[in-house]
Length: 113
Length: 116
Image (cartoon, rainbow over all chains, first blue to last red; front, side):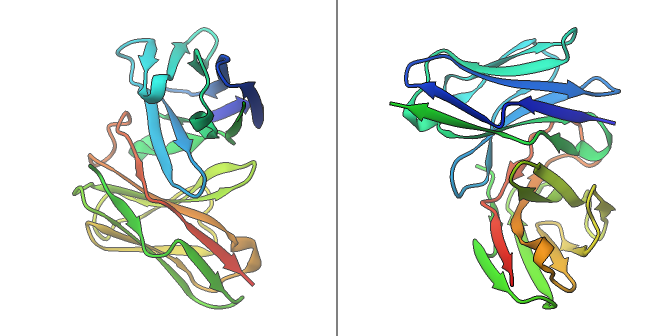
């Protein structure tokens, strides 16, 4: 069985500050891990994914995430927050049958000016 | 660019009505998925399909059914809508039968359903 825990349903940062969104996973098979972003009234858009090629993964819009097997974590970071980063972020794990994804509950990021 | 479209952005239905949500993708993807999204619960998988006329139950299939008559189209059916089915419904698609599990799922814009 697989599961994802996102710590913090709401995160607030100032513009220009570091963004850190936490994700821990549980998987009985080697996992593939994804971060998706959802802007208001839109569907989900892929930010980045870990597919075992490299532990540090760079995505779109300046985001990156590091896979740490020993900590079963895949935290998302961005050095400097921008107002346009305000959105809901979802971490997901895949590794079972049929390319199914298991999502975390999501983290809403607020960026203060 | 992959495009996944959903037939309606907003839908209001009455309890007991039969509801059809349609999803179409234009990238010849084998896999298609239906999720519902609720605050604090993330996305939960209702049904998925890896081929025409094939379907598999996800984590919360009760009260729903699906149809996939053509590769590009995947329909979600609420046989008798209930108020607890008020939610955001998201469709997604991905390539490769049986899932190379690193494949990206591409999402539609969602349908916000209100059942009165």
